[in-house]
Image 1 (cartoon, rainbow, N blue to C red):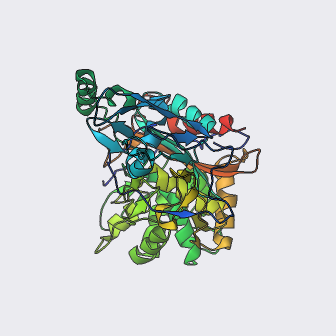
Image 2 (image 1 turned 30 degrees about the vertical axis):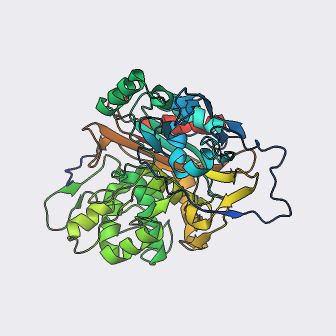
Length: 470
């Protein structure tokens, strides 16, 4: 979109002083589960602290405990029916298993493992252990409530997804059977205008707005457009989009020729629009792609929607808009959590996944293959230099008010790509929790229009998540 932007002051999120901090569904059915590779070690048998293979359906585990179950179905061809503990809380993680409508999410990806003992062949079913932290998951879900939005938390060291929430959510147990009540529940979910089965955390990419400033700042430092986050930029206030009369302005006087540090603190769109034009489309695109934008083959192991940076011939005013997270830039909440994880981790990326281990029907405990995005696969790469990452860490800590976290927030503005016209608000941050985990968080609220003027309601969700792990 081409905004005629008159900014109101948006204060940085005051996040929890202590360390850091997902629900929805995966509507994508996948039955081509990833192959697994055996753990290095002497024994293929199931450790004492891992559930043994079972007859019937295997389970999906959170913190070692099953969040799924099964019961006799009284149906000859499908003798077991799936049950769910806290179904709406973990629907984004588990997906669904229905006698009538198939499988999705982890239920679909690992169908062969989870259903091996439910086919009457004498085999046993295995289990899938996730990386989800139940306290973070619950905090995110409670804070989001029934509002449209999503929250993701990632362990920046291992890549394990600690929280994955999309709201409003749904209960997969309501249509897991093969009766008229299941058909009714399924139809109601399909017809619901709030789209509770849309996985907003993984499957919906929209304009990231001010949170994309982090990528633009990284590009400016990597390309030595500015050598320091404290060097004054060339961005006037207001800033006129090239070839137009549209001005990007702000109520914050400090945004005039602000340094990157100050621009992150005050969410100065004029600065990052000007930086984008100075960098040029190809340089900014290269940095965005290094962060994983325009990757259309990302799995965790559920397929993730592509986060995009515009390619091809791009007009200069659209390059400026891309600098403020608009103009064809889109991102999932997971991608923005990954961006913050890279900065937090000294410029290094680690493949993200919500699966830790898989227990096969013979008791063998395995890690998913690297290509299946194992959270402990160790696959990583240097996305930006350590010097750039350290400068951004310093600036982002200032942007969050020096409260023990580092982060930025975005304004509540109408966002292209969303399923309604409500304003969308973003918040991204990272910190270490008391146990030493380095965690990044991204929160997006899609119906952020009814709040206190100048406030960012997504920041309040983030604050609740950090408090849960303090």
